[in-house]
Image 1 (cartoon, rainbow, N blue to C red):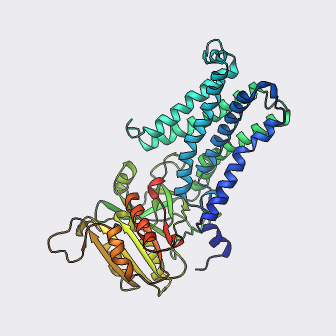
Image 2 (cartoon, one colour):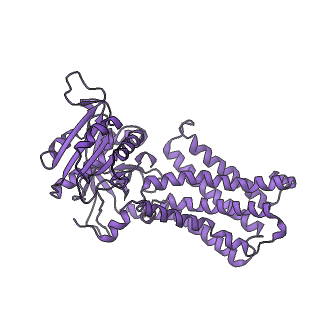
Image 3 (cartoon, rainbow, N blue to C red):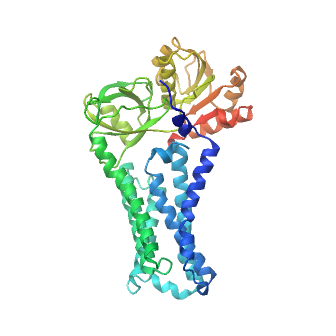
Length: 451
């Protein structure tokens, strides 16, 4: 299977791509400020104008939160889902700072503004402002303390989406009713169009895309129980030859969002790495470790159950040339299995090493597949067990900096490293590789836990 030059360019992660991505984001964030300056009254004072500028920037940032959460190919693929969602979370805190700095500055400049907090006597524009702040606090509290509050992932997704829309709508109504910085009709129209675009994007994600997925359901073909509470599920399109159906293609290492036994309009989709070969996309396979609600329910699925797939996503993909070192721990082996299966199906003869950490001999996911692949590839496998039985002949401990230092000398020059597993392991391995002289551009990873 060949890959077009454009697709190779778009999917490649680089610091340059991320820099361009951040520059475009910054441009969109500050775009409202020149418009507000058109009618700026210096007599209102520096601090009042600064507070309003903070409010505009915060509102723009919250609008862009919809863009980053939309799982758009254009937004996600240049830098990777983990960076997009990590950036999304950090910008939520920064946007919150700007939004709350707006009224706090006003209160410090003139204490009379404190009267606007009285929602019983304040004008309607102030009521919308207070409502927006309260809703925003609810978004932050539920996001930060979801697990402590014992809130399910599905309930959090639903409330997060509804509250986020409410925050933007009430803030927009506040801006339009104040009117001073958007007094011109075209300024008001621009803000309405931008807000409608952001909310429309949410409608596309929550309504239009699910409607399209409803036309292309997948079904469970088989369920297999693997080591370490891992369930391997194979799914296929129900009717790949139906009118309007498009083939499903992915790059080895990517993931998709899954929904099972529910309507495609249900808000809770769950991300999992594809573990099968990218050369055979009529059927795709996922190896899922039982952790939270959905991952535990997977083991109860039956052949014939309906599933919906949103994807593929991810910039953690198989390097096209050069020797490879695949580094994984536990169920983090799943995207690496996809890479290995794809290499085998393509007849790729390059040298590959697999460094794989697990607890013991009975908790190695995909062990049978790995053994089979050693006969189809130039593959060297190093298993590292933290709690092996007494007669285990292989490496003991963890895939960590010490392990990397001990094995790096045996890695061919020019190798690319693909790492997937717990964040702590990935951080330590990445640092050890760079400290050992590996070029940062040759180290590929994606924080799947961020998703």
